[in-house]
Length: 346
View 1 (cartoon, one colour):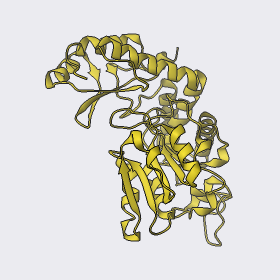
View 2 (view 1 turned 60 degrees about the horizontal axis):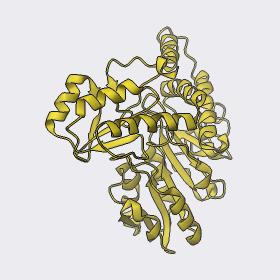
View 3 (view 1 turned 90 degrees about the vertical axis):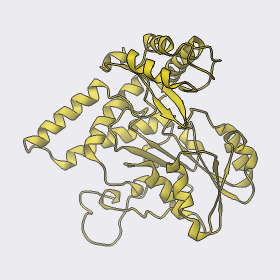
């Protein structure tokens, strides 16, 4: 089974912070690090796992690989979109949004760009004809709430508003169709089980020419290994023009992890993660939810009990956050229940 790929020594319920690497990814990393150590590493060889990862990710989110750019951090691509916005426009986002989605737009204040923050559940209702862009996480980092992307897309279609969706806390457990949105961005080191240093950016071909490739470097070239010196500008004619020079070893680890997720399949990943989260919710007296992330109010004593039981979660926005993924099984959910039963308040 897929769980046999993982070697956690604890009940690891913290994928929303950092995903665990499957054994196949560690093996691939070990091989290339050994090659590096003995002087047999060849930089062009790293293109193969990156290309494989780009292709696998594209299939996972329902777009062609030509619509996928790669980099290292989500905020870089959000910043690219922010820099493309016209002076004086309005951006709508969710109150309490993750700052890598929010800060790039706030940083454009000198160009009179206004950022309007509203409650997540009212986001679709707050789209106006004057709203240029909606920027929102598909799944909120702090507490796992899902954005109503259907309602947001429908509202934006009526006003001509473009949508940027951060998928960092979604793709890997939640089925997602990136073709519906002008832009999506997602980091790979959480639910996609990569070393930190991989990120995917999708862009609709209809808006691609409106983005200036501010970060254009050698890897954004039409032929990266032969267009590395001198002008004229000769960038890739698809989304690769937005590629950021890759952190090679991170992509070596990313490709096998995406293979594993593809073998399981998006629907099965969703059923598995949500089933475990709801098994935990039921065990501590909470109603069923729609997210693989569970956010609960607890006490300091609950944290101590978790440590003694070897259950690993995280604290976000003053609450305990647990996240369930492919590495977890029923025993993990049950051990978390045992540690926290009687210490969950909502």
